Image 1: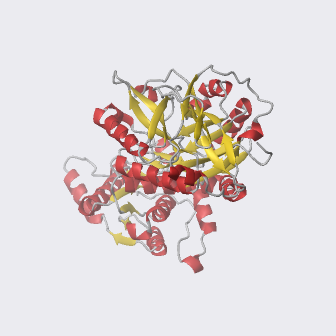
Image 2: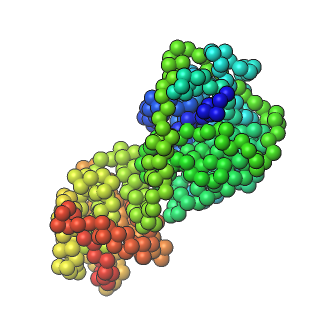
Image 3: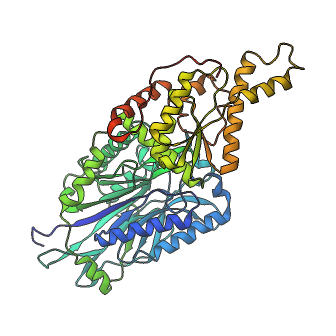
Amino acid sequence: MNKENKKILRVAIGQINQTVGDFAGNIVKIKTAIDSAIEKSVDIIAFPELAVCGYPAEDLLFKEHFIKENIKGLKKIVEHTRGITAIVGFVDMDKKGEIYNAAGVLSDRHFYGAYYKMMLPNYSVFDEKRYFNAGEKNSIFILGDFVNGVGVGKKKHATKECVIFANDFLRQESNGEELLSRAEFGVVICEDLWVDNGPYMAQAAGGADIIFNISASPYHAGKSKERVDLARDRARETNAVIVYANLIGGQDELVFDGASFIVDPRGEIIAGGKHFEEDLVIADINLDKFKKAPVVQKKQNTLKRIYIFPALKQEKINLVKKKFIENSNIQQGNVNSLTKKMGNIEEIYRALVLGTKDYVIKNGFKKIILGLSGGIDSALTAVIACEALGKENVIGVTMPSPYSSSETFNDAKKIAQNLEIMFYEVPIETAMNAYKEILAPVFKDGARGIVEENLQARIRGNILMAFSNNYGWLVLTTGNKSETAVGYSTLYGDTAGGFAVIKDVPKTVVYELSNFINKQTNREANSTYKLRATPRKKQNE
């Protein structure tokens, strides 16, 4: 082999937005990403954790038909892997009916095995021990070699065990010379990489050049940096390439930010995916480059080794003869998208937009409605809703009482005008008087003080729900985290709704987000909005 010949593996990450239980839609997205990867001569593509069924599936995992549908979905994906190897997250079930958080290894229309997640998180938003059994076995996959159409090595059948995967392939350089290439890689799932001396260490010690981590890692401020820092440490620790495939999208109360990446054994990012967007991340990995000075001792045959030899058909030969896309062209844009400086507030804003959009759409709604009080919380929520769904799908309602000032009414109206959303005014004085009349015989002093104040909030909640029932619009509530934490809200009033957009945003961050939006907005050019960041004293509303 001359010095120009390199053992290069083209790896991709299918960073996709899945929906729990939407097997048909999820499978289409996986197949589409596979098609795009094949067009770009990718050898291995990795998809996020539980990509087939969506994450988190929660108590749907107790339903046998849900598990069976997800396995049927995986079989459909297997049939779509001609000329490529795919690592796909799904739920597997053993003969005893026990289920596992699994990564299926598929290649050239064959299923070679599944790795079962070993480290099951059971803290914060995670409750995986409630559903899954922990995997116990670990393995290595070996990508076999083809020389002049002849497979090198003994073909072995996969078993249902943890898998490090070996798949031999023919690569033809521009000079027309055939390359003998071989790679060994491991597969782990999310938490497996976060635990010190986890399954990845045994895989690296067993000879893995690459470790694929398929994840559904929820977003919180600064989480992307935490993942990259961790993967850099693991890459240096194992002297292996770390491929981190993360989910994107909103699912119920969680947001997944994507930002997938590939890190080389030196801890350098060689490819990175977009934040809060679907993406196909591609990189060429030169396996010869990192063979020297291993950090961990490579011990052969310490794990079960599974070999994969795709059928060398004419279409496969034609596929691997495609001209390489230059490394810099593949990687540089993706690296920039990951390392681009995104301020903490911009990151939070994009997470709120994505979370709102996916919650509304994935639950079958098209439009939302919210109360506009003239205050900053409802104004911010309206802006997020417009960004997420489009102004044509956002409806604002102001519901003045006898205690409402003209200033708050005008502010609510101005926000609606600047956002160009549908706007209703529904005064609540008549409803308030009716409640007072009903309660007068049983309340000695009438409905006064906190009773009267909370009546206003509850009347407004009823009005918004009436719109929702009549038109099928989802009600967004507008309370922030600070209010919720101290109980500054009205049960069945301003808490009434289908989704609380800023429930996890402290009031201080509400102001920061509003200032960020104002700085991003040119009112003359865009005729959009200006948010008031000055707190006002609430007057009985």
